[in-house]
Image 1 (cartoon, rainbow, N blue to C red):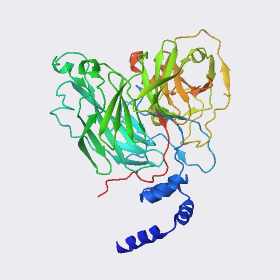
Image 2 (tube, one colour; image 1 turned 90 degrees about the vertical axis):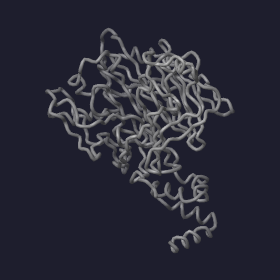
Image 3 (cartoon, rainbow, N blue to C red; image 1 turned 135 degrees about the vertical axis):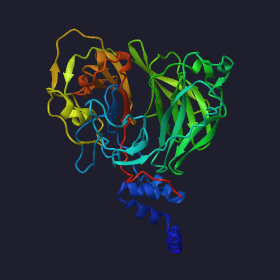
Image 4 (cartoon, one colour; image 1 turned 135 degrees about the horizontal axis):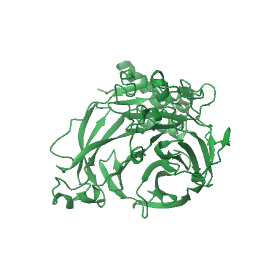
Amino acid sequence: MEQAEDHGDLAALLPEDVLADVLRRVAEPRWLALSRCVCKAWRAIIDGGSLLRTELPFSGFFITFAELCLPEFFARPLSPLGRPAISGKLDFLPTPIKVCSDGRSLDGDYHIQDHCNGLLLLDGYVVNPATRCWNALPLCPHNHTGDGGIVHGILNHDYYLAFDPKVSYHYQVFEIPYLRWGKDGIDPLDETSEWPPSPYILHVFSSRRGCWEERLFVRQGDAAGTLAKARVYESRLHSVYWRGYLYVHCQGDFIMRISLSQDKYSAIKAPMGVGDTNYIGLSEKGVYFASFVKNHIRVCILNESSNQLEWILKHDYDLKPIQMFDRQVHGPWILQDINYVVFRSHLPNINKEEVIHEKFEWNSDDDDFPKNEDMVEVHRRHPYFEIEILGFHPYKEILFLSRSETFKLKAMAFAYHLNSFKTESLGSIYPSCHRYFDSGLANEAREIESFPYTPCCWIEEIPERVN
């Protein structure tokens, strides 16, 4: 211990320019990121000199289909030489991916609940697909006396991940109550109370402490509304983590902006004039809100420059270019077809081109989309199309959308450039074995869930508890 202290004293004696030159010679980003966490002085030198690339590369999308057991990975297959490859198979987890005797299900749950800066949150695990590392996530010991002062009417809980490798290698998982909708068994007097409450008691898991704990968050500003108005069905709720705040899209169509350092939160109402299907994401200028309004998609940006948080309308974008697209595109992006690979021996003969690879490499720098190739003209009447949001590009004002026929047939991905109004088809996201797993779900129950993925290769291991 004394020797370590002596080394620390010697480093402190170095002139700032000499120390900066030493740190500049650290080639591996993960070691430079670790050096950034040593002390405030080292962090200031690394940040001031832009020694560490602050943006994690955008790789593609993890996509989950309601009737498939494993998430799919959709990305560009090519990358510069020397870049590490990434697989979305999740076959590195301690429980092997085992096909059950029925040939249609797996012994385990691999549903992605959330993502944040290279980490994925699964049921019982936090994983880093880029480094094939994982941590077990213990069950949350619920306090059955109530959540945030509300005793009755909690249907279940949703979980959201907060992680920023530029600040710390530790992560936090937030458990947010999901309210039961309807009025059966609900006390009418409770329904008039403000929602969310203040203080709001939330369960939070800290990888630094290695345990769940109750934390009280005090509201700043007005409540989003009453408890009764929050009891609505919401099928897709997302979150983003940006600059120390976790933004959670909650029931009742408001955003809860949680400060992790101050234990405070704000309730931000949705923009005016939005539709029923909404999405929040992270892009070039911060937090974005997208909503379907008739045959358009409305995009707003959260303005946080002043004390009052407000939504600024960017534009209403016409969806006709995507609805009228009449071609079948093979590439340039490719679906990894993970379910096909895992269930191949149980599947009937499928006429499938050989586009499967064990690993798909990611492109870290070139995010410009080339002109589509291998297009096949299709002359037919336009069927009914369902358009869903895949997510925002994390660094450029590009919105990714999917378009599919009934039951997700012929699902394709598109990139909508929000500044040039240009749309580009990226390729098919329809899994080869999707029909084999058809269980007769109603079309509205087959929503696609997707997560923009930015692999973090700085971390060889996800940190365990620090004593």
